[in-house]
Image 1: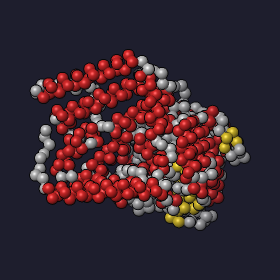
Image 2: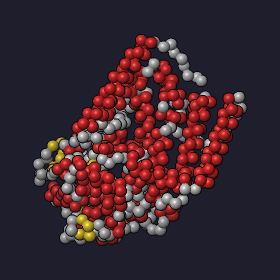
Image 3: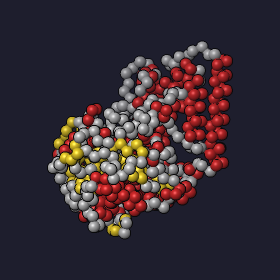
Image 4: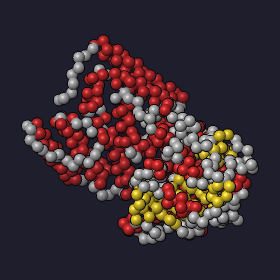
Length: 594
């Protein structure tokens, strides 16, 4: 083994051991303190219960027929014998290919020792053999219904990620080398950070993914100049200061998701979609949702529509004098916007929105992404029990769910870096935003889970909002529907299928990358690409095969679509003399912590 053996300082090791014990005590105290105060949200429900039940169904399938499990174990044994034979050849200097197919790139195993050292190479290959075996147990469990199988695959992925040899000091060459070189100081630092993060999470681990001290909303995030021109108990409406002498006549309202904060579209001047749109001569308004607490528990989907986009549209009309506005909806903000459009189509003001743009938005949840794993009657009921306790779903719960979609990148890489290497993560504005979680109001979140993910009522024309039964077919305004090719939350196919529900012209565009990077792809650092392909007809796969690829960001393409035929008027100052600004952007609601 090429692991260094430094001279050990017994006095230093004793001091480090004392530090580790002290931080362990702090960790226990943080956990118990939250337990005594009743702050630990995970007590209701037991989050492991569904995993045990789901994987138990897999085990039941295999144990019902002894011949099945014998065959499966035989294949595993043969793979391990092959691995042992491979290792023997490598030890004796022979060239031996891996005994199992390896991923082309896996940052967990980047250290050269994983390939060069027979011990660590054996551990790595054994891990992938075991992972492959476990995945096949799920895949070949033929009697499982599709939803249970999907859940089992998800839970198996979480277990496999957690059990990777890269997550443990004695089985990770880099961690072992670091621990020996630093004589355990890295573990002591890691324990200190772990205690701090459990305390910050009120008894649960609030995993730090970036240096939180490096960022501040209003200082180096969300800095596009503007004013809050309206506020109710659910939203602040921000109008941004123009940077051009003239602007397009039709103003723009952005409806972001309440699951996250709006400044994903205004991270910094270089990445800001909002700043870019303002510089492009658009009068931009943005909703900033309140971070709800117990008093918002009865605010349902109708309340969010009325106090959100409808209230904002009324204010925009009062400020600009324009009876129609363009609108953008992002993610669940887009789903709410689509419902609002269907509601407006049956009102006496169907022209309140001139065009609608959707960023990675689902209106048909038949092909919804991996979040469907969390959706069935039993799991939703458990979430509702939790929300009944607080009046809202704690933001940390949703943040954990999103992190679990990419456990190696968003959970275990930071567990290793922070608590075993003892390193503070690097500053990263996107991950700061990702950890700046928001709560979800009880009634609204329950409505969303049941009507969208569980029953798909908007797509079926069965959703009841504001006293009306919604029909997306009555929405006849032009729509720009942006999907992202690698989106696991709102898959491109799901967005494509949903596009067919609208009654007017739909421009479907597919961006490269995923749910965030596919949208936040600034012109100044134009990466990825986008595809356009004419009408939304036929199957998604056929559309994608024939679509025309264009390098770079879709932003200019959208701007040309939005502003085509629109005349220019004199630039508008925030409030327009009709509303006295309440404070500077980004406002007060965005600074509220979950």
